[in-house]
Length: 501
Ligand code: BG6
Image 1 (tube, helix red, strand yellow):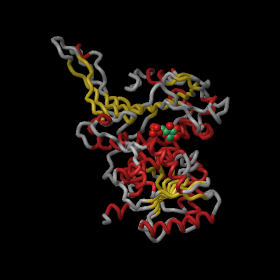
Image 2 (cartoon, helix red, strand yellow):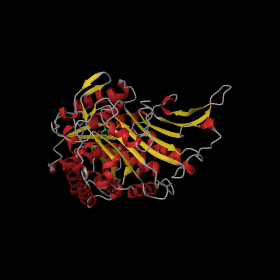
Image 3 (cartoon, protein in one colour):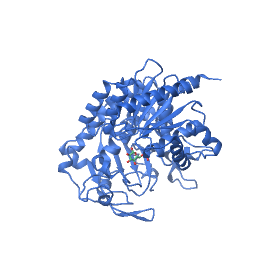
Image 4 (cartoon, helix red, strand yellow):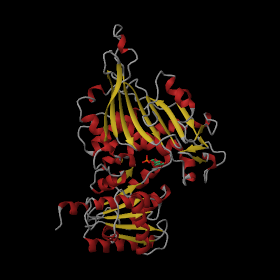
């Protein structure tokens, strides 16, 4: 019997870039998990599009090994049969072949009749950004979006543009083809369990929100360390660097969740309205502020987990003289009433000494009380949000050491989400796909968020020409250039990173 959930969610998921890495590593395993957990109805159908010739069977076999490798649930023949019979492969050159779109539309219509999906289609553009506009134009020209039945939504992978100007042009052009409410621009960090949890921790506890401002918070730190290098993406990374690959999107998105005002409700537009205000309040960099407050870095050869790794300049499709950053550390401010004067320290890097993403809220110390000499040198209160790989958070407070002496020590009230019995947080892509089908756009970036984050990032990029570091300036497997440590220590503070403590 068809339930309401079936009616709402039954749809066709059309993947442009069906043979690409993202599809294999993330999309197909994510949909498998959703089916496994019965979050999608049985008539949910996948149509993957690629330029290579393949039969449905060949494609399904390839996807089987992806699911085996990357899904968080184990596969058996029964499950595979159930899942794979809903996967279809269509081969055509989506960059030029107009007839291919007409054929695809016919094929999708047949599927709609066969599987009763009611005209609901989610197009996922898992392709290089230069193809976004062309695909959307072809969909429009062939009457495959804004149809009279069901809904048709488009999920767009990052990067959305490569500069403010190109992002603007892209947005201008595609917004003439599809309404904003049908566009779902992905930032997969918004699908991460602990990023979602920020809203719960901030707005669900009487403890934090009254202290969540410049009166009580000394500084905010965001650290995003990766062990991986650029892998096979040298050509893309040469143009992006860490600035556009991580800061412009994932890191600024995390910052907006930490710094935004409470939204009037949890409707997508209410949340996004508040996030935009944070981005608009970010203090842009100038030639003067750049020098003191930004450290650029690029990795040299080194060792990661006991294995030797090559320098960035030796990576495939990277120039031997490249000055592209694989690391950045910076100090900035959010110039609004809540955050005026609170430094925000950010650092992100590839080929670091650990894999960890953490957000640290460091509270101000109590004013010193002279005759409490036992309280000399007590630690700051910290709220540490562990985004990944371990998920959870802890609150560091001071307490008396047990014993006859009155000595203070720091203790941690620890919530380990990853340790919970039966814990298995959904992968970011599972949540994003499901929420796009449910039409919840709060997990996706609105155009004005992108616009202001590009503006901030460009204020940094403008200064690059006059501030080229000696490359490489940190060895793979370390905590980055020494200047990044100085950046915070010169302010009498330190980086907190529990993964390396
Ligand atoms: C991607 C970047 O958006 O995010 C990659 O392009 C980066 O360079 C990745 O490695 C990090 O994602 P996660 O989920 O592994 O932290």
